Image 1: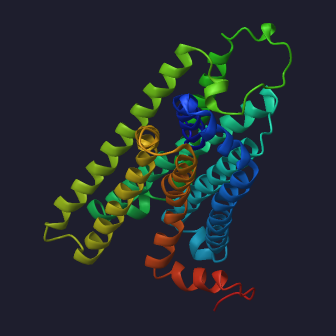
Image 2: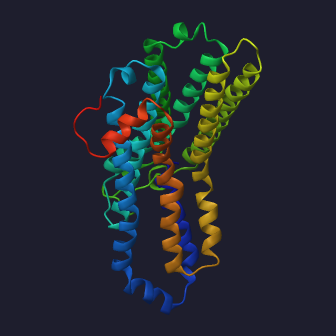
Amino acid sequence: FSNIDRFILSFLKCLSEMSYATPSQNNTTVGLGFLERVMLSTLTTVPCCIFLFINGTMLFTLRSKSVFCETSRYILLYNLLFADTVQMALSQLLYILSSCKIRLTYPVCGLLVMLANLTNEVSPLTLVVMSLERYVAVCYPLRHATIITIRNTGVAIFVVWTFCSLNVLTRVLLLLNFPFENLESLQMKQFCSTLIMFLDTISDLYDKAYICFLFISAGMAVISSYVGVIVAARSASTDKALARKAHKTLLLHLVQLGLSLSSTIHNPMLIAVSKVVKWINLVRIQNIFYVCIILLPRCLSALIYGLRDQTIRPVLVHYLCCRLTRPS
């Protein structure tokens, strides 16, 4: 499941659990429905717009100088931020459509869901490639320039997107088992989400198995690179300054992967909260979770990388201040 799909799925689960509320509670919710939708949509849309502005500025920054376009780690960072930005935009789009009670057709919903899944899976794999690049830089410094070339970086990015695209294609093929001929029309009767698009048990099992495989493999790769750098840092022949910097970078990648994994605990947390709070408070808490657990991690990469990298920082700050002239 993509992040927005987990959000919508948890919403439906909580809705079903709260369906036994008293009539007075339901009347209160209905009476404040429009006002609440406006307030909560604003709560998510404003931060999302800010995050999109920061990510968009970072993407523009990474294309503003030749050094960013000719350095492998900056190219990989651009790919990571691009996937995160597209995922964030799609998540917010689906959220707004759901808040406005707009129902899509199956083809349009399918396209949005597949794109959301694609970009959601590109991020952890890109983090793996970035971790391997830092590992090579520390453990094989003399071969780094030969191994980590612009061409090889492009091939790695192509492989990442191809692998994720094949997974999306597999999900589409699994949909062929569904009897679409029984549908009265292509207009959906429910809101767009993976829960609606992946209708059979096989699709659900495949999705869970793939997500587990993806994050376990990515976690092992990043941790292995981290351990390798620590071991190499103890060697007398290793550049200590480079090793310390790579050590911090890999630790950052591990944190980023953890943030991606944090979205998987969104549902259990929300269901647990739904048992102890009123419906109106649950909706507010749910939106806070959405911003903090799903949207915010997508923006942290741009801020953390942009502020800690001595080459990116002055250029990023320059453009964040809306100065249109190129920095020196």
